[in-house]
Length: 280
Image (cartoon, rainbow, N blue to C red; front, side, top):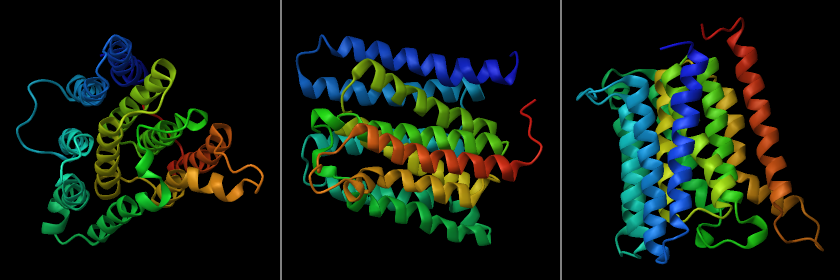
């Protein structure tokens, strides 16, 4: 398999980046905007699933582990995203059900065992329900050119931060899945250079929710680091609060700063907490 670093770069960076990049390049030739949005979201699910198979092997274990549930959460997010894009009447209900059911499903073994850390299940659910107050979901996939990649940038910062926290917690498989999402989002920013459509954003959000839940319950990830990292979600809101009255237009540069500062702080906390650290 080679060194863990080489494995990480191949399975979680190069492969998902290339896969999503190819789909985004092909999407430029697709005239139907809705179809392009569906293909975009499907590429994210495929990239995460590919990393899962490369990291954990084939055939996939039929017993649902927390790691397999992260991929299933992405599939659920993809389905909810399609319903949202199609303006189905039940779309919002499906998203709310996903927000509540997915963490509970992932945390079911901990709940059945009566483990005290089961109380942490409230954290990802609370984060998910505060999203509409922190992010303007009404403009998902249709943002202004000046901050066209802001939500993609926020999601990429969150996933990269989670990957580093998981790595310092010596939870290599979770780090691989998180880094895979970060790599695909980097591809979206460099190749697509536009806001992701609703299906892709909801897919990523569902996978993130599942990943946060799994790290809280089934790893030694530093809780303080994860709480600090969650500030990244409100980067757009912080930008609005910080800008002057004469400069109310959102700025991608300012949003990047509000993403980077809590992310770097969270990674530093996780690194200090890890003590002597080596992935070998």
